[in-house]
Length: 209
Ligand code: ATP
Image (cartoon, rainbow, N blue to C red):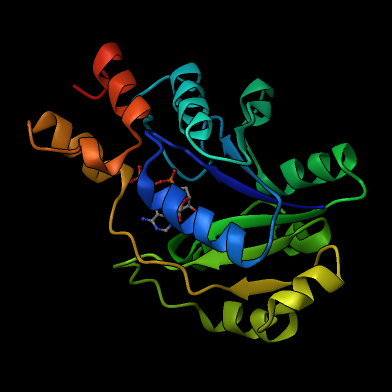
C-alpha cells in the first residue's frame, strides 16, 4: 500500500497543511495520510506550543478526516528530527509499503541543507505541494538533481517504491502557522484557518497569546 507522510512543526496544524495534503494524497492514490509533528525542528527555533500540544492538535485534525492519523514517533526520539532517519525507520516498520513524503515548495527549495539529503530518496518518494508566495526559486544545483529524479506521472510513483520526486498541482492555500499565531496575538479572526476541533483546543489551552 502507499502511505503519504506529512511532517512539520504544526505549531499549529492548519488547512494550509491539510487541504493540499489531502488533495495530493487522493491524486496519487495513497491509502493513508500520516501527520508527523517534528521534535526540536532543526531548521527553526521557538515553537509556541509544547510537543504534546502539537501532537494533540495533529490528532484532533486527523480525527476529523478519513484515512488519516497522527504519529508521535519523531517526538518520542531523544534528538532532533531528521526526515532521512525518520523515513529509514518508517521503511523498517512497513517494508512492503511505498512511502511518499509530502512537503511544500518552500521546504523543498531548501532540501540540500537537510541532513543526509542525498539519501532522502532511498526509502521514499517526495511529492512537492504548491505554496502561495513561496518565492524560493529552486537553485541550479537542485534543478540539476531534479533532472535525475523527477517524474511527471503518478503511475511512476507506483512503479517504484522510492527514488522519485513529483511536483504536484495542489490547491494554493495561503495560510501559515506564523500568520495564525500573529492573528491570535492581534485579536484578529483565525479560527477558519484550522479544523474546528483544533480551534477549540487552541482556545481551551490559551495557546499563542
Ligand atoms: P510557520 O509559519 O511556523 O513557519 P508553516 O505554516 O510553514 O509554519 P510547518 O509546520 O513549518 O508550517 O510546515 C510543514 C510542512 O507543510 C512544510 O513542508 C511546509 O512547506 C508545508 N506547508 C505549510 N503550509 C503550507 C501551505 N499553506 N501550502 C502548502 N504547504 C504548506
